[in-house]
Amino acid sequence: MKSLSIITLIAILTSCETRESSQKVSESSDKKFRPVYHFTPPSQWMNDPNGMVYYDGEYHLFYQHYPDSNVWGPMHWGHTVSTDLVSWEHLPIALYPDELGYIFSGSAVIDHENTSGLGSSENPPMIAIYTYHEPIGAKNKEIDYQTQGIAYSLDKGRTWTKYQENPVLANPGIRDFRDPKVSWMPEFEKWVMILAVKDHVNIYSSPDLKTWTKESEFGHEIGAHGGVWECPDLFKLTDQNGTEKWVMLVSINPGGPLGGSATQYFVGAFDGTTFTLSDEETRWIDHGTDNYAGVTWSNIPEQDGRRLFLGWMSNWQYANIVPTYEWRSAMTVPRELILRDTERGYEVHSKPVDELVKLEKQTVQPGSPEIREQVYLLTLETEPGKDFECTISNDLNEQVTIAFENGIFSFDRSKSGITDFEEGFGVKHEVDFSDLSIEKVKVYVDKASMEIFINDGQRVMTEIIFPNEPLVKINTSGAIKNAEVILLQ
Image (cartoon, rainbow, N blue to C red; front, side, top):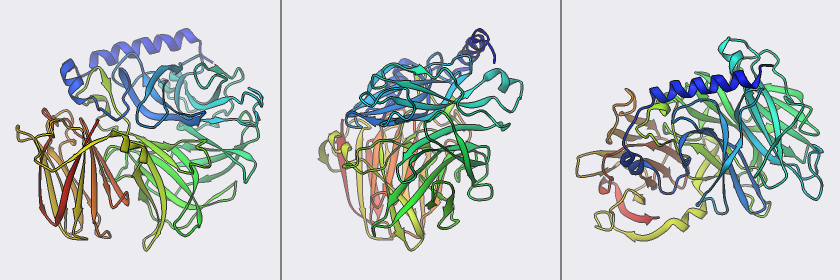
């Protein structure tokens, strides 16, 4: 174990280095690109969503955060809460690096039965389960520098105490051993952890969140393997016929279908020990470039019943160099995941949560002078399966084009504004959607992003952009029967 002072010194040196390498832009640019209705950190760096748990009327969102720079560095857990998934209240940093390492990604649960003994039946603890990343071991290219630790809170996540016998899961000698997603599974009467392990996942179980037993492995020769597996999740969904299936999410970087980061999913069965596939198709939760490391909230009330998802709206190809300075990165809008049994097999569809209707102000037609800012919902109704095009632009001739032609759906951001910070950013992204009969397209537009939901979430495409002026001019052609704009606030 390395001393706290050495790790602190590394953090300071990293901070100095990253500050010198930061891309600096004006404060006006920061304001221009900071989203209105997507979560962003108050300042500095953010990446993966962590510790997503609902408790006593609050949705908790923790996140990977470096409070001393706008590029990745020694990881902390930032913290925010919401009562409606729309407005977020910033809270103090929850977890700081310590003598065991930086605080990498993980999850949070409510230990209702106090199986851990860290609270009481009257005041059950909120438990965070996270990866310790020991930076000196990592720098020295050791292989056991990532372990799993826990911390607990008895005041609704406002203050935290780390378990004094951390780590609770030691490293067996694997370089990438991280991102624990833990759930209480009542049908098996135990806690289950799914953990990313290099190019696959391991599944563990525990009676008390402190002692863990390995149950199985999954994914060695299944799915995409162009990079390291990260940020897994495992949960049940019920399809439109009442059939229950288990869904596994696994993010991968690099190796996404459009380059860089992306999140794949698998549908199958889980018996408390082993996950078994329904089919071997590799599917993607989002077909754009900018939805990564997404996981779901735990402890959602049974009467609600939704499986709620949130992703990091960026890509490791350019996350450290996008043209903002005061803050960096945003989250996607929260989404409900829905299982559908289709002719193509089981699919997970994503739709924006119903709560987003609170943002809606006024419905206008494209071309209305009311569209002055880049904060709106664009709805397109199309003739089923036929080609169409929609160009969204400004007076600087900056534009994005959303199109469907000969079965190919595309998002072209090559002329979207600032694109020269990374060679592969300003390009046209194309996806084969020839299996779809597209009838409806919804585009949630914020200052630096567009989230495209096709056929009520049958497919999704998330893309970030950096126009120098708001993209408010909307032109449509082809099989678009109707277009409406709902102004958002």
